[in-house]
Image (tube, rainbow, N blue to C red; front, side, top):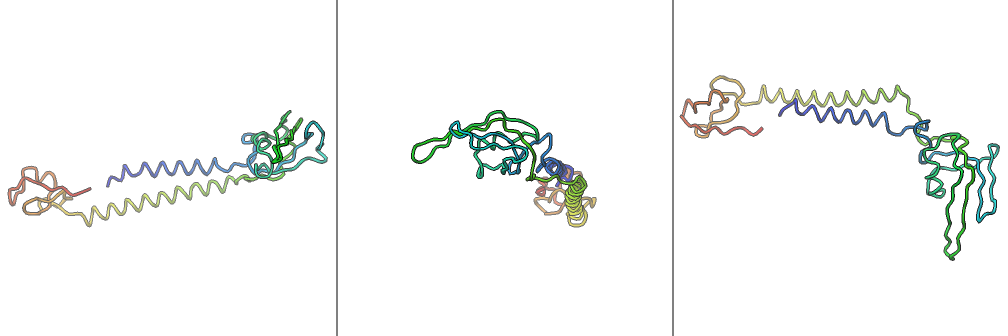
Length: 201
C-alpha cells in the first residue's frame, strides 16, 4: 500500500464536497435570479385569442410557483433566471384541446414584481463553513486511520528478513525463508536457491 498515492483521491473528494457545499442550492440573488419552484409575483396583461382576460398590477399581481406542473412550461422557461424588476415584453404559447380547437395565450409586459418564497433559502455562511470543516475533518480521520492501519501491518505483522530483520519482500522458493531484496541479491544463503517468490502488494 502506498499511502502517498492514496492521499490524492481523498484530497479530490474533499475539494469536490467543499465546492458542492458552497455552490449548490443557492438562493435567489442578482447572480442566480429566479429558480425552479420559487413563488413569485408578476405584473402583466394576459390575452386569450386577442381578448384581455387579466390585468395584473403591483396592487394585485399574478402569483404563481415556477413549476411546469402548475403553469405552462413556456412561462416557466421565460422567467427562470430573471431578477426582480426584469421585464419580458412578450410571452406566448398555443393551447391544443382534445376537440381540435386551440387557444392562443399572450402575456404582455411581464415584470417580475417580487419573490414571495425562495425555494432554496440562503444557507448561513457560518453553517456552510462548519459543514465544510466537518467534511474535511472526517476525511482526515479516514486518512489517519488508513495510515495507522498501514503502519501497524508493516511494523508488527509484516514478515521480517531472516538475515537483517527489516521488512521482507518475499520467500525463498526452495526453503521458504523470508528475505529482503539486498540479502537475497546473491541467492539464498541457506539453500543456495536463486528464486525469490515476492509477496503480493
